[in-house]
Amino acid sequence: MATRRSMVGRKSARVAPQRPGRPTARRVVPAKRRGPAGPHLLGLVLLPAAVTLGVTLLRLGGELMEWSPRYFSRVAGGGLAVVGITWLVPIVGFYFGHRLGRAGVGPSSLARAAGLPIAALVLAPAFAWFGSRLESASTATGLVAVWAVASVVAAILAVVAWPRLGAVLVAYAFAARLPVAGIMWWAIHGNWGTHYDAPTPGFPVMPPGARWLWTGLVPQTTIWVSGTVMVGALFGAVGWFVASRRTG
Image 1 (cartoon, helix red, strand yellow):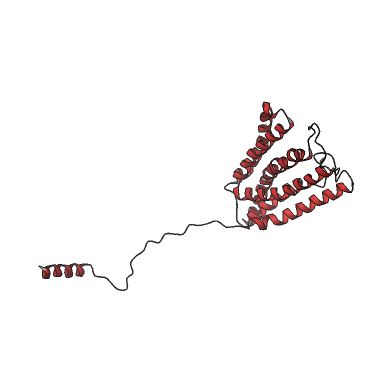
Image 2: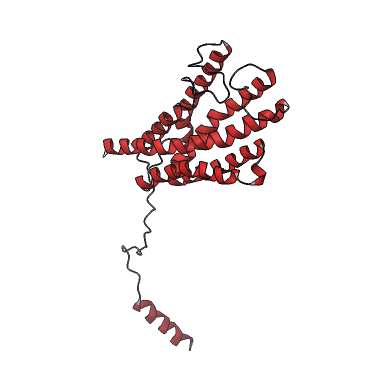
């Protein structure tokens, strides 16, 4: 019996002999194609953030030195003074979009990249207006809270439009606005006589800390950040379009 089994084993070994020199075929799974990585976020944000901080300090110095109100207005809200970081947002947004475009990084579509920020800019005041009809928004602080929530919700649209650009703009917006919030803390507590501590018309009298919270920290980290993202996203789409036309 053992001899018979060994003979069967030998026959089966002869039926499927191994052929030297022919390696076993392996299934090759193609690697996933990845898009271009593009410039690093810090590398993109660093220079514009430094320039923005320089303009902020120049604005503060001009107001403290009581230079021309046309360039360094000291009224609440800034008075649309020529020297101000708000005017940098379209330039910075274009710069970010252009840099990403030259690196081969772009949105899924131009219509989405430009259309959603426009929609966000329309929806933000619409949301705020409807929210202001609520009883909880009847106070000054309630109105600030409504504008803060409405602007953040609308800005999410701008981030979704082109997430890579949106992340860069959010980082830049906080880098631009947090120093302003810090300056407002010292200006309000020190009564510097600048637009950073000028009382908002119709705003109730509050202790310095509470006034800084509702007129400084909350608006700077929500409304102004969101405005930077929305406007920057629109001009970023333009910058990408220009870069893609040149490299195409």
